[in-house]
Length: 465
Image (cartoon, rainbow, N blue to C red; front, side, top):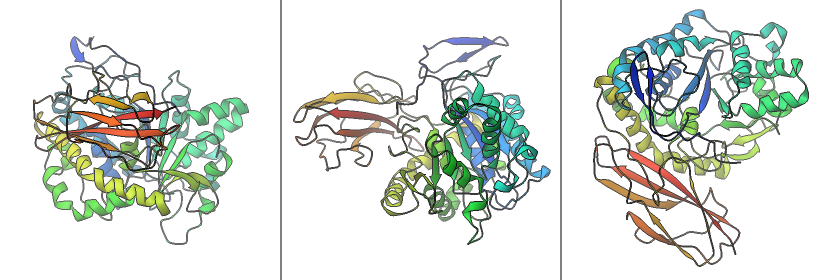
C-alpha cells in the first residue's frame, strides 16, 4: 500500500464571510464516518465524542451516525440528542479552539478541509443522523434502508481520492446495509470499488450483545468479513480499546482535573461507568501525526498494532490483535504511547477552556517538513546521516530528541544500536545483513512545555545490494 495521499497545499489565506482562514501547509484531512451507539448507560461514546471534537481540525468528519451496539439492541431517539449536546458544547468552545491554528473565519464550501481547519457546528449537525435502528444481520435488507446507510454510499461516491474510514464505535450494520444496497444495485466492479473506498476500524464486534456466549454468526460484522475478505480492509480491535478503558479508570483523577474542568466540552465529558473512551483508538489510528499510515495496520501507531489472521470468531479473517504476539506488541506500544496520547488531549482541552495552551513541535528531517514518511534507499554497511536540527516549537520550548526503531513494522528484525539516540543529528549504520529488508526508524521530538507534547516522523529505509 502507498502512504495515504495528502494534497500538498502552499501556505495561503482564504476569505469567507470577510474573514481570513490561515491554512497549514501539510495537506487535506483524512475523511471519517463514525457509527456510534451513544447512550446514557454506557458513557464512553460521549467521552470519545468530546475528544474527537477537540481534534476536529485533524479530521474531515463526514458523518456522525447513531446506531445500535453491545448494550443497545434498538436505537432510542432521545440518545441522538447526546451527539447534539456535544456539538453544542463544541460550538461554545470553537472560538477558543480556532486560536490554536490562527483561524478567524470559515470556508463557504467545507467539502474539502485542510489540516488545521475547524469546521462549523452546522457542518457537523448536517452530518448527524440515524442509521440502522435494530441490531444484527437478520435486519439487513430492503426494510433496513436508513438515512445513515444512504449517507455512507453518498459520501463514498464523492469524487475524492481519499479513503473514507468507517469507525465502528458500536455495531456496524449500518455499513453492512450500505454494502448490501450497493450489492443489489450495482455491478460487481462497482461493488469492489465501493468496498475499497471504505476501510473499517471496528471496536470489537458490537452487532451483538456483550453477554458472554453471544454467537458471532448473528452479527453483520461476520458477514462483511466473510463475504468481502479480499476487498474490504477490516481492522478488528481487541487490544487498544480494552487498555484505554482500563488505563482511564485507573487514572480517572487526571481526567477529572484536566478534561472535565475545561471548557463547555469538559462539562459534557461524563464520568465512566465501565471504561474510559473505549472507542477513541478508532480515530487515533487514522489521525495524521507523522507516526503511521492507517492503511498499513502493521506499522504501529497510537492505536497499537494489527496482524492479518483469524479473528475471535474462529471463522473469518481480518487485521486483528486479540491474542498472541499481536496482542503483546499492541500492549507494549499502547503502554509506551499512552502518556503522550493523554498529554496531547489535555493540551487541547486547555485551548477549549480559554484559547491558549501548548502546541506540538514540528519535526523536520533533512530539511523536509510535513507528516509523510521519509523514504530512503541505502546499502548494507553504509552510513546515513539524519538531521532533525531544523525542528521547531511554536512556543519556542526546548526540544528533546529520541531516535528509535520499530522492528515489528519493518522486515529487518534484528536489534539496532543507535549512537547518540538523543541528539538532533545521528549517523545510522545500516546492518551488513539487512540486504533486501526494510527498517522503520522513528524520530520522536518532545517539548518541555506544560503538558509536554510529542511529535513524530517516520523514516523508512530500504536496504539494497
